[in-house]
Image 1: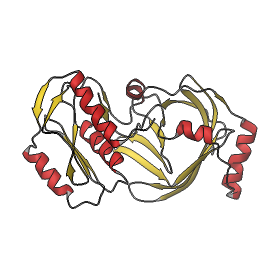
Image 2: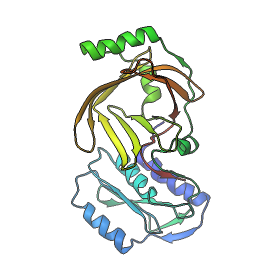
Image 3: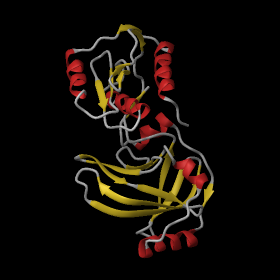
Length: 265
């Protein structure tokens, strides 16, 4: 489900009032003010979020106010610890959106990417039943890999995946999030989160998910097309095989949210 920017701000303030820890006259710290001033040089749409306890997060170059605000909140919440007061949006697209006084709340649950154990508890799982067609699916993957053929997408499966993540249940694992037009694969490593961005993606009625035009986020190196075969799904768990490894089988959770970013509640 997708919500407008106004709903996000209203829900955030309502949640704070529901478990109020006290009122806060919204004031920037010296470090927050400096970070906000630096944001003025970045391309629109920009957003800035702050916590009464000093954390802050910012985003820029995002395509709309809703996404910019959500990312700024995510980055701010990524700096929090349990017991600290949660973040609020302070500014979006150069305009202050924070009220003068807000009710604060303390964080009781945190999600850190890429933690499959935390994600299931934080976002919940999407439960849908699916049984693939392995023979047809394998032929579809071969047609993409060998012949660069186009696949006919399935709207029902696309709507189920869009805006959500397939994530391994491990504390340090890997996953894929499917946006409207692109997909992003990510994995936790000793050096941080490794990301691969794909320009577009398709899912067929037989369970083939192909992601096209992949490139490594850190250096732009191309990785081409990657396909997986969705074998089955039930109770929020999907079983799949990598297209380039026919004998492989793995199980991952279908997360009811975007597992790429930190969040708190």
